[in-house]
Image (cartoon, rainbow, N blue to C red; front, top):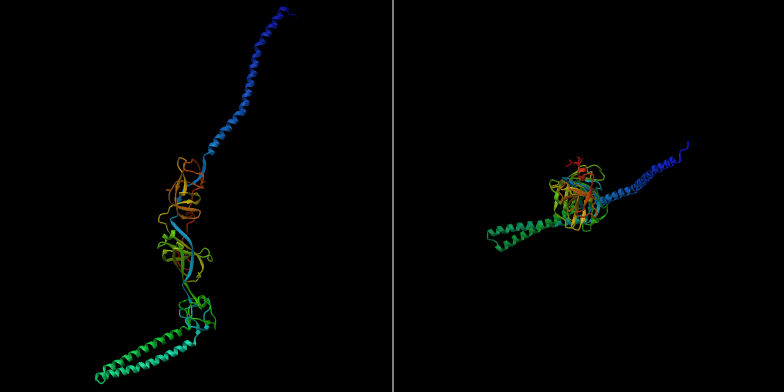
Length: 421
């Protein structure tokens, strides 16, 4: 059906009226959508950057604070032990020289031969000494005869003087002649004894019980008396090794531990794992002005002869420490113009530089005798850039275990040479 023209116009006007308010609403929604999209894009680009900036600032602040590792000082060992090279010598050691000139007739002991005191080692052929002894005995006989005659003559003159038959002067002369003859006889006897003693030196005998360690002559060799010629004139060398003297040079800073309380033992490379007991016998009582060390003598029983005189040995000396200090790793030390120092972290996280005094040196660890009280946080491997008052961050590390406490010295075991200390 066809509507009238008037109705058609009214219908068109109504449709335009409805469409007019819908157009701004769609534009508003589109604008909001565009704004939301732009906001999402801005958020996607700005927020990560802001977060990155915040992270960078935080990390920069963290990097501005130095990170350090610290340790707490422990107690140093209460026992002080020294390991020093030792000079092992026989308790008695002597070269044997000739006392008379001549030729070696025969020898009876070679190297390695055990000998007793007075045992015959060699004989020297010295005929001129025997001739001199015979001459001296003849002179002694003449002096004895002259003295006997002078004595009897003086006795007769004494008897004649009692009867007033001779003068006092003549009697005194006879008595003086007797006394002179007595002195001549005494001189002859002394010369005979000297030559007899010299003749006895043609027999070379051992001065003490020991072992022959050197024989420097053979049969027929020309022997010169005396020792002025040096080692070349030495006939034999004897060593008594049943007991040993061991000499140790103790440094001056450790000389205070030498005393009755000190224990000692030896170790030798040819006997790994074995300890030989030693006794502190004596010390020099003075510091050597060249080596700045104290000479200490140890006595070692060597009944089995296992330790040979002249061997290389290490002497282990131990004594209680009167006032042990604190133990720190050596890599905590700082060497400043004012002396040796350590860096300590306080409760507020700030550094303090403290001067310290070093006592014993354990190698990788040192003893601190002054400057610390214990319980401090001491910086490990402090760099030169650390200054007092700097703020630091502490990284925990394993506690310090002093070397002497980690591997305490065990008591020496009993050996074939005696009971260990």
